[in-house]
Every structure is written in structure tokens, then in C-alpha cells.
Amino acid sequence: MNKPIIGITMGDPAGIGTEIIGKAFSDKMIYEICNPVLIGDRAAIDDGIKIAGNTIKTRSIENVSDANFEFGIIDVLDLKNVDMKELKYGKVSAMCGKASG
View 1 (cartoon, rainbow, N blue to C red):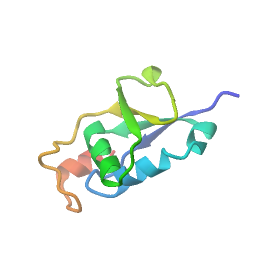
View 2: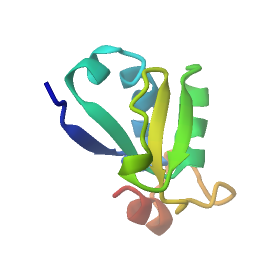
View 3: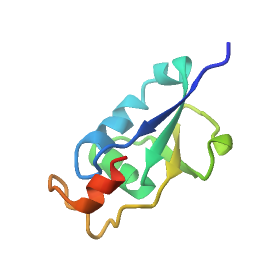
View 4: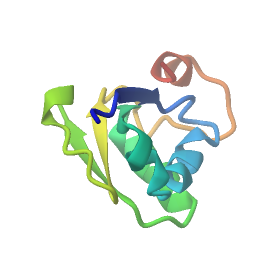
């Protein structure tokens, strides 16, 4: 059976979405039902995963065709659209609104 490729946006990088991503992708079931690709800023995603105390890894890809769909390593279509020096958790900003997808 061919599993569908599912694109998942990271949400607002100043919110809890990036932390939830780490927890969600730590469940092998997601890879059993689909081939997931995360869309967003890899640095923001990595920071959220770290804040959540998760050790799951990420890997930047430029195209969906580059994805490995390997459990334990999240394929990230890295948009590089968050300035980590400007990111303020829990605060509304135009940058984060644009980056949320």
C-alpha cells in the first residue's frame, strides 16, 4: 500500500506548536499511516523540540522528493523564514504570523 505524503505546517513559531511537533513525531504511528513532511523554519522547530525536552532529530530538505520518511528524523521543508534573534515566545508578531503557514 502506498502511504500518502502529508505536509504539516509548524504553526506559529512563538506558540506551542513546535513543542507539540516533537512529541507527535516521536510516535511511530504517524509513519505507519502516512509519509509526513514538516513545513516551516527548521531552527524554530529544533528550538521548540529542545524546549520540550525531546531528542528527535530534524533534517532539511529542499523538495518533497528529497524526504526519507524515516522514523526518528523529521524531514523539514525548511522555509528559513524566522529570525531566531527576533523570536519572542508567547508574543504576537508579524514575522511569526507569516511563518505560521
